[in-house]
Every structure is written in C-alpha cells, then in structure tokens.
Length: 550
Image (tube, rainbow, N blue to C red):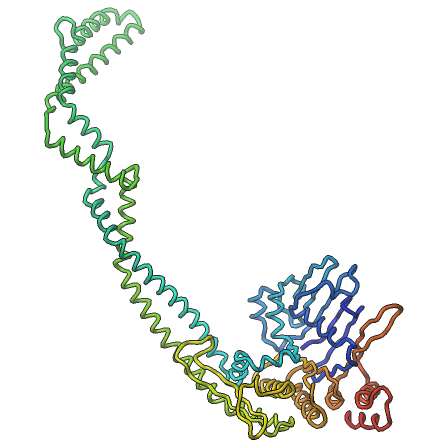
C-alpha cells in the first residue's frame, strides 16, 4: 500500500507531504484545483518520463518520493530479478534536475525507468478513463479470465515451452536450409578428402622426399665426385693420406720436446683417424650408389603430387594439409549425420508440440469453466449499477495454431438493453457503461488475486444518484481487501471513504499553489455539503451531508 507521498517543486506544488492509510481514501476538489497534478507527480515515481516544463522553479531540483508498504506483496524474487535491494518499506524517488536530466532511485539504489515501470505494476494501479479502454482489448480480457480461472502456473509453463518450441522451430528451419547447401558441397568435399587421404600424408616428409629426389636424379655426378675425392686421398705420390702419414711421422719425433709439439701431434693423429673414416664412408657410399629409374620416377611422382596438393589448398606444409583433411572429414561427417540431427530435432519438436497442446487444452478448459461464473457476477453487479438488462456472451474458440497465451480466440460480446443484439464491447458500450463494467471487473478480480493499491480517477463520470451510491459501496467493499483511492465529484461516493483529502489552490503573494489537506469530521461535512449544494451551503445540504456520513 502507498503509505506516504512527498512532492517538491512540481507544477503548482511548492512542497507537499501526505500520509495515507489502508482502506478507502477519497480525494475531492473543484475542477482545476490540481487533482491531475497530484496524479502526474505520482505517475513519475511509477516510471513516466519526466519533462523539465513540469518543474515549478527551473532553478531548483524537483523531487517526488513515494513510500510503499510491500510486506504482504511477495516481491522478493522480483527485486532480485531487477537487481534491487528489497525492503518492506520501499521508497521510490524521482528527481528532475535544473539541467533537465532525470534520475530514479529505488531504496536509494539508482534505477532505470524500465525497472520502475515493472515494479509499479505490482504497487499501484492508476485507473483513468483512458485505461477503461483496456477493457475492450483481448490482452486485458484474457487477463481477467485467467485470473479467475487460476491459470497463472499453466500460462507460465505454456509460455516457457512456447519459447523453446519457437527456438527449436527456427533452429530446425535453419538446419534444413543448411542441409540443402551442404549437400551441394558434399560430393566436392568427399573428392578432396579422398584425394588427400590417398596420399597417406602422415608417412611423408617433404624435406626427405626432396633430398631423395636430388640424390636419385644426380647419381652419375655423385659417383664421379666420390671417385675423384677417393683418388685425391689415395694417390700414391701426392695422396692426402700418405702426405698426412708423413706429417705425423715428422711431428712424432719432436712431440716429446714440449707440450705444444705434443698437442700438434695429437691433433694430426685425430685428423688422420677422421680421414680414414671419411675414406671408409666414401667406399660405402660408392658401393651402395646405384641408378634406379623406377625409384626416381616414384619419388618424383610423389613429390609432384604433394606440391600440387599444397598449391591447390594454399598450404605451406604437410601438417597444414593434414589439418585441411581433418576439416573436410568433419564437414563430410556433419553432412552425413545431418539427417539424424534433423530427425532428433523433429522428434523433440513433436514432443514439445504434444506438451503445448496438453497445457493449452488445460488452460482452455479452466477458462471455459469460469466463464459462466464471470458472466453471472458481472450481470448481477451491473444490474445493481443501473444496468438491469446488461448481458454478456463470452465466446472462447479453440484454434489450431499456438498463440502467445494458449490456443484460444476470445470475444467479449455485450448487450446493454433488451431487444438489441450482442456486439463487441468497444462497439456496444458507452463510456459510462464501460466505467461501470470496469469497476465491476476490478471488484471481481479482487476476490481472486492480490491486486495492488488502486486509484480510481473519476470512474463515476456520467453516473449519479443511487447508481453512484452503489459504485461507492463496491469500492468500499474492495477496500476491505486492498487500498483503494477514489478521485470523485460525487458526494455519495465521497461520504463512504475511511479518510478524505481535499485538493485546493491558494494564492500566496504572486504565486498560485496547489495543496492537499486531510479533512476532519466537521470539514468533511462542509466539503460534502458543498458538493451537494455548491458554494452557498443550505441547512438541508448540511443535514444531507451528515446523513451520508452517518
């Protein structure tokens, strides 16, 4: 419930602070006194966009702060979802700075207007004549029926499953489109994969192949050079081996004369041993050297094939070709398993379809079952409100496709008078009739669900006398279950409030300001008498006012 409201520097309000109680609160005032200003300020804390023109003194900050007692509203999870600090005494504050910038706070935590708008739907419902038109909209009509049918859990399950269903449908559609594209590429990918796989890439080394090719392709030159080197080393007169042997003999004779000579002798001995190994290896290489045209052709073919593949796939190594082959294999596998994936998704979609149909049917049956109760309650209440011949025909048709809230198509048909025909509510009900229907629906809803505080802004427009008395009774009865405000011009309704506030203008110096005052018992009598009789109050008006307040 709304426990207090503070407004500073807004429109014609300098500064205003007012506390509210539970029950039925009346707000009255002459036309133009500033009731709309009060509503405008309250709307700001509920998420309406701010406008610098609404600030009374543009050099100062405008502040609107509302305090709500939400102990019985079960809103902890909502606060967690909105990332806000929860407090049973929740404070919402809006500030409009002289710069025109607007700020919002919930329990002293900065908040977005979206967060305010979401939270406000759980805190207070400001019902104006404009909002009466909601009654003619499918969304609101479904909301009423589902509240009475206790469909909240079913609708939550349906909407969650429907989101999954639509996501799966989209995924399946994309997969089928992909399949058509992938099938086009499948044969080509398979050809490329086999081409790479036939080469046995893991067993190939590009450097080894190139070296092998060079050796086989130059076997004659290699043989000649090996023979030439051996001849140089083994020549009887000037052969390197014999010459080195002579060098060693000469150095060995002086090796004992000092460490330097001994070291030289040892180095020559090492060179001699190394040279002997070289000659031995030359013999082995020459012995194993042979011309093999077939092997040369095989290596050449393999090398050309590898180079062609690298050029074809713009690869610089065998490792890159192996990676490309793996990717091709993956693409082929994906294409080959696509039918299985599509089948799995189609099966999941079929299962979800069945689940959605079951929940939608349950929603439909519960709606169908509650419609006679709603119709009867509405017609009884409207009869008390001066519409004895009002009749409702609420048609619920179960459709084939899934809608956002089930599979139902809803029509609220209304007939105000005998002899007329049923027609859509927006075409057959006048503004005054719609107001009475809306009040009746709000009253019925209050029996089934926890409604937020509600503020009726002149819902009694166009009615008078006994009907207004009945409307007041309905709002009074509603206030037993929730906090109800009524902005009214009718004394019959004003007299039924638990508390009564008056909005009025006063002139202070060169400025007109709007004020809000809680009336005591005597002041209420005078206010209601004025509502009955005008500015000049007669004794009969005073007596009537007292009678109404009795």
